[in-house]
Amino acid sequence: MILEGTGRMSINASSNLLHQQPSWTDGYPTCNVPGSFYGTQWHEIYPQYWTKYQVWEWLQHFLDTNQLDANCIPFQDFDIDGEHLCSMTLHEFTHAAGTAGQLLYSNLQHLKWNGQCGSEMYPSHNIVVKTEQTGDSVLMASWKEENYLYDSGCGSTVELLDTKFIRIISFSSSAESSDEKKTHDHPPKSHTKKHNPRGTHLWEFIRDILLNSEKNPGFKWERRSEGLWGKKKNNSSMTYEKLSRAMRYYYKREILERVDGRRLVYKFGKNARGWRENEN
DNA sequence: GACGCTTTTCCTGTTT
DNA sequence: GAAACAGGAAAAGCGT
Image 1: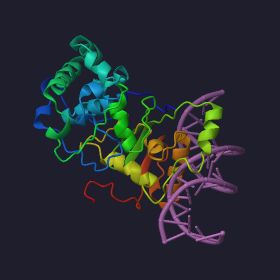
Image 2: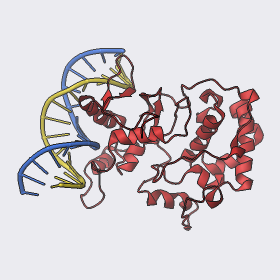
Image 3: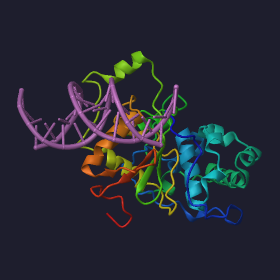
Image 4: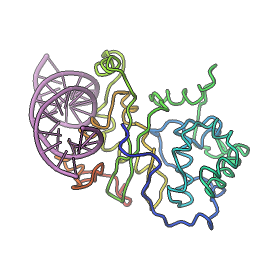
């Protein structure tokens, strides 16, 4: 289910693309996501091995780092994996994203040949890359270690509008036949843990995916959640409708508050903890 | 096993 | 009319 078209963001348009050099050489900001929801992150592996999601992560990081408006990059034109991305020419980057495309191309070349991945950049990370026979197994192995079933076909988006409001930009569930749905709705008990209420709460999960973005005063996210709640619960039948019902239960507990007149916008309530910038 | 809590699933009705 | 919202009800899964 796509609630809103991809490629859209509402962010600060405070930066000037033409006069700002990319700051990649300054080193990447610490993501500070121990036990990340996202599995292997884009900066931990070579671009050639990125998934679609990691390509978006990289684009998002580029926007964050350079304080760029999201409209600078048409995300829909980068709905590709790392291998495809690396095969793109400068002309194709420029055609897709203009001046930002040139910068993206330049940065990608740097990443491809200077080896930003792995232990040199992140000595504290101990990334285990399992080599399997299939070509795409490198990433899959890491995803599996995080108990996620990576599905590059789904895309979901959460946007933090300011320091309190959340907007669901898109949420997609895997397209299933009714037969498939039946099996997912009632999986055998012995198969998987369907959810873990004593583990991560939904609102904490939402909070964390917001907070774990690179620090940026614009608070904008696009394509960041990737259906992660469903992945985290190993529940491929999760939909926006179900997720939003769970979120509405938080109204009573004042973890979330209604935002009248605004669709797809949620707001942290007084019982939500840990989302403020000055709060630990 | 009972219980409480949280989440999931399904549903109907309302609002935008 | 479609999408999103609201909320009731029941059930599932987990910890105690």
